[in-house]
Length: 183
Image (spheres, rainbow, N blue to C red):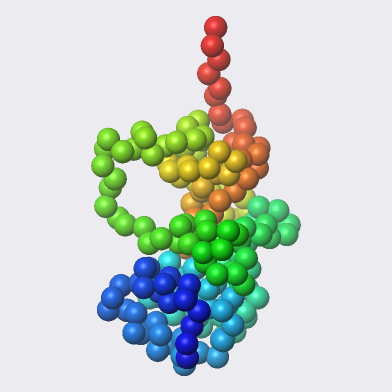
């Protein structure tokens, strides 16, 4: 089966060369056919074959759960907060952050000189954590946007990267942030 160019590009960019044929084989054998569900599975797998197999199997049982998990932040409020629309290609304006956030994370430590420069916006929030329900959010050190805060979302053993509204994160951390004032 032929896939939209953004899906092929995502697979080429995120999966190891040795895993790409297996990804296509599993997708071809799968009962899921809509680009939205395929993008959701790929986004959640973050280039890892174990997660890919898990989310592919989960999508065959309950498509809505997988799509909601990929497109929304859950556990922040009673209703999931939409962050992206995976019915659109990864490169669309609505999903540009999704493709960037889903980049496979390397375990190698960043160069020491790059750490302060990478901090960017929201320095007072960096590495701070808050818990909502059973989900832990930790503010990432790389903050490319002034209005949104990139956080690591840990639910059980799965860690994903989400982009939350700045005001929401400030409300969660308000009691733990010290603001320096000039005399």
